[in-house]
Length: 94
Image 1 (spheres, rainbow, N blue to C red):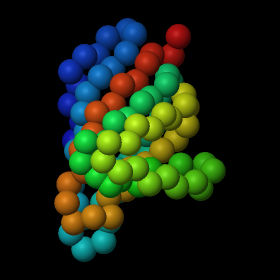
Image 2 (cartoon, rainbow, N blue to C red):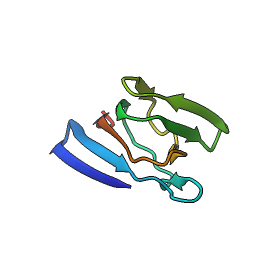
Image 3 (tube, helix red, strand yellow):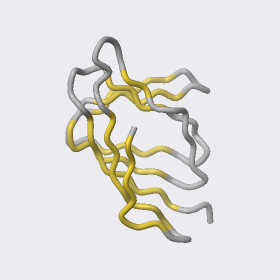
């Protein structure tokens, strides 16, 4: 998974992400968590967001916005044959 940061300071982080297709099978990001709130905007999807602690899965399509609370472990999964892109904003743990 590729991530680029446009702004990263003591208050928040703003950037984009790209999760390529898996070819045969799916492509899965590392498990991640943040100390602050996270908001995702899916530009090119769909993408699956998996929460390993609760074993919940959410499916986000192009144009969807998703909120992820602080310290909630998550993974991104791309089951498609195309790359998935989106933007993220993460607040710092205040």
